[in-house]
Image (cartoon, rainbow, N blue to C red; front, side, top):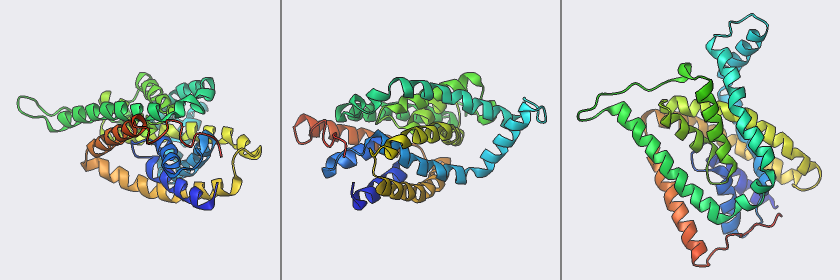
Length: 290
């Protein structure tokens, strides 16, 4: 992998990790369109450490408060009914599905799941799901003729059942094209949470899974399967860009809908299917590891 490739892929990772459009799909597509080797699941997992570092810094006050309350609850210093202590447990519960499925389907994630036809399909299907979830949220928030405004839930109303459902939605993002934030935000909106609450919990829930995945894949880098220099460079770029994207995205969703991302996902999926169907692009383009 060249330094130019690592810069562009790090930029793509940072731009797309927190938007509901799938960073893994865009890394895969960037390589395919540019004629490069597929950066691979290991490269994706390691560069995600950079974007998760951005999450740790952006939400540092929330994370410190949750960790303090959670540890305090273990020793009886903080009531287990405390909201922040419960959030700590809910993040753990929500992380179980992706941990189990990630290990179980590791070979498929690094192989067949990276087929461009599957990526195109998941882009479209999950785009439609996100669109439906967003429309339901907008209907509740604005009401309408013959319909009153309906209050949506915030994270203080999050329980074990909803936390586990969030976790299952996050696990779907093991398939490139689904999008971790897109799946969890869609799940949150469909369960009746506000846009801001769904996005905030989506980012917090991703921390254990992404850091664990990145640490697990570091062994590939140590065995020579990933180029250390370019990968670290891409991770730094992903961190810088990712932080800026988080700050923008959290402000954007307070007043805007997710429909621009829905249209983008569907359009990209259709274009990708057309390119593969006409033979302009192989479904396995750039698939061999570089």
